[in-house]
Image 1 (cartoon, helix red, strand yellow):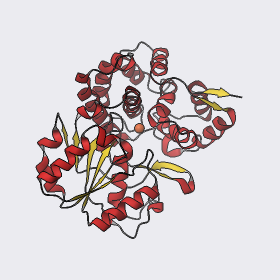
Image 2 (spheres, rainbow, N blue to C red):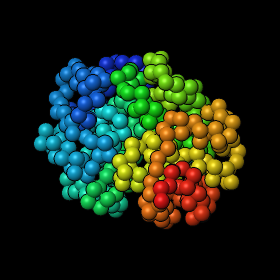
Image 3 (cartoon, rainbow, N blue to C red):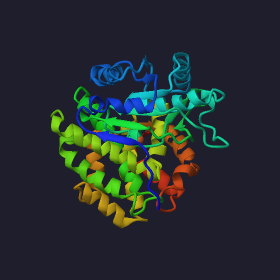
Image 4 (spheres, rainbow, N blue to C red):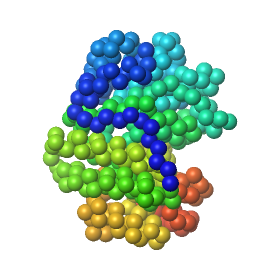
Length: 369
Ligand SMILES: [Fe+2]
């Protein structure tokens, strides 16, 4: 058994302001990568630029990271970092900004690698410039994982790149959730939930690494009624939601994700479904299939979430994210690809048959003729 999360992580109120000196240890010139609006709206961008000013660290802002960041965006950001002579990269936002920052940090240190080759396995591990992660959503967990999910539109591929890039520093502050819409909090919390369930229902799950998802699922269960209610999320839950998300990230840092994530990428790439719901649609049916192999683990997951059975799990997810319809043609295409996706199938805790894959699609999506 092995445990390895080398990121220096602070989870506390005002942690960016409280730890400005930690930026000094990371580098001398920073490229900040973020999206167009949310980091400016939720105060995280001001906090980070204030911290860099306080430490006299010059910075440049690249605010063009889109949802599902592309190889083209990452290439452009890496060039901006090079032009500015940045020696580290700060990702502020959800998984998109942090994942894009990881990929740009790799390109920054390896000018001979083109962004369109990011998905190719390297002959040897490549170095990368340090990354600082400031998450502003409660789902990705990217601040505590070595994973970067990047989309290459030229070959119609959304997938994690094979390079392992743990941030050097993560600053996690629940207050950045305050300006997020309730739907975004719910969607990202469902992503975090999926990370923990897929980490337990996983061939790499062991007594050591399951400390994280088991504790995180209990925390998630404590947030469940607030997520399901029509009311806004109470401010005192922000920190717990962020903590759960980071713990969920630590969970998949050790096990990776399995079928629900593998299945989600086609929905996002082909139909633009946001990541959280795209994963969540498949989660209950995957859990049901895994009950054949690891019934005790499934029972434990349900109990930690305060649920009686799989039907309750299905109903809870439908209340949170609804259902999704695809044509039979799309469903057949997606299922055919998943039946040969060994990178995900081999991580399930038992042999997933083609019939199991069909069952998950049929149970999870509304299939239109
Ligand atoms: Fe995810």
